[in-house]
Image (cartoon, one colour):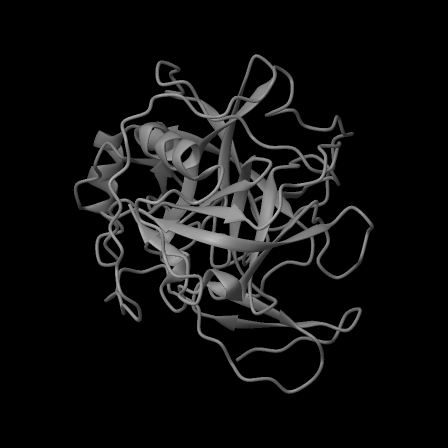
Length: 331
């Protein structure tokens, strides 16, 4: 473990692909999942649920999603990126296990958060997780934060920890976010037909500022160019499927890193930010010719909409689980 000085009553320790934020009181170490491929340990039974084929999701009114708070340009550098301004990425979520920050996530609706399936390698009990929206600097209480408990966890049934196939999960919150404001607002889901080829997109998170380093107090952002899957497959020396998208600079220096897992890669078109990727895996951080790999959200729009439509109200009879059991679904 690595420790730094306590800032406003907290310190950070590196643990796998995540960073634990805890008060300055001795605590038991919690291990979070690594970014590199590994064996998946399953600690609970699978409940497979067949969803009806639905093509529409609860729709946000125009102007409700993908809108960033205008900010002045910042020059504060954080190794390959810049510090984001408060409210600049209002969909960014801090996913916490027993109050430890372990992964990022993206608010996509008032009661739904999209993240990576591998964030739940160590613990699949949704009641152990909370999400914080409106978070910016984790060392201070800024008055913009909203904490919500997780009610139900939906993990893609095709997820494989070794290959990171189908690395996507949905969280249904116990309560909807009270109201959208300039600090809390969802990102838009992209349309199936929208092309983001050759675009420069933005990654955000509180992860390490270098491979093996500490997490950051403030939310940081970095711009990365999208790469074709052909180029990425060559660089990574493995076949990158169409359900994944790669981003990074040829000579490195800018990338997502440990602690950013599950967080957003968003692309801006016509003034609106759309969620294009979910931070998934990579061989290292910001190395030359080693891009980051992200779950391609457009490949899972049907899955996302089916889950949200089926489970937005009361849990339906199909797949209902005893409330004494963890509400985890593999769909």
